[in-house]
Amino acid sequence: MHPVKSPPLSRGRDRHVIAVPVLPDSVALEVTVVQQVFGRRPFPGAGDLTGRYQIVLCGERRRQPLPGGVDLGDLAPLETLLTADTVLVPGVENPFAPRSRTLLATLRAAFHRGARMVGLCGGTFLLGRAGVLDGRRATTHWLYSAAFREAFPLTRLEIDRVFVDDGSVHTCGGALSTADIALHLLSLDIGDAYADAIGRLLVVAPHRSGEQLARDPHGQFMTDFLSWLREHVHEPLTLTRLAGQAHVSERSLVRKFRQATGTSIFEWIGQERVERAKSLLETTDHLVADIAAMAGFGSAESLRRNFVKHVGISARSYRAKFRPTRKSGGSHG
Image (tube, rainbow, N blue to C red; front, side, top):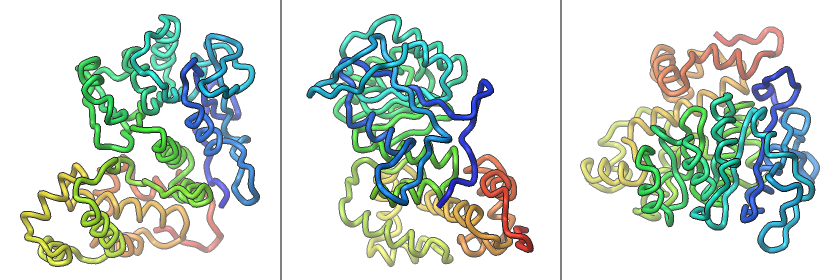
């Protein structure tokens, strides 16, 4: 599948620049995952985004060997962060280690200049120290939760999230969730359908709704229930039917679902239906009214309300943005 839209650009460039600061204890795996998702892929049919994104590794030193002997080659100057479209801070082995004033000041300046800021795992601490997370929602590795809350009392920590999207600031909770947040960013830039296709090629399950649980306190029960719910989300659903399917009382289901997902059942269903509608809008020429029915909304008006609530724009505007060209004769309502 080819992208139907390019990522946002700035400063007159033809590629979206992702600047990655490399520190002495950066986690090489996270840098590699970012390169795989946004860059050239070493197997046929995987697509190539090097014409749309430019990944620039930078640092305070020209060369920065990482733990384990990994050498990423020559690095661009740290000032590259100041003109980047996205600044992506990989995880670090010691999030509590002191960082230079120059690094923190440059991160802060990049944010104030309008860069999208991304912190991976322990890299979230660097964004916190730079003042980027004040008044925002964020996550990090659950092992660091107590220290994070103490260090950044102005940040709302959501430790049970794989990743958190707070507008222009994005954070994730662990090294293996780097792929999740990278695909989420790809979805924002180019569209869900393309991000899902890349996720399949990289053998990564898509987390389209954005903020899935890092740990499921109810184990296989909730995993199985969510799987069933996704398969039937387009059908009329009542709490009575859902509780019967789960073989628990309605009250118990409401409580367990909120504990496991951090949201209510019908809020979750609404978000999932919107995600289904987004995919249909990107990949088909069906009328909006038909897509509303296919996604589980009772009417086009219900789709419109939920789309504006969860996406911020109308379904028609979304289609125009992410699928600007269609076959002649097709209709999109």
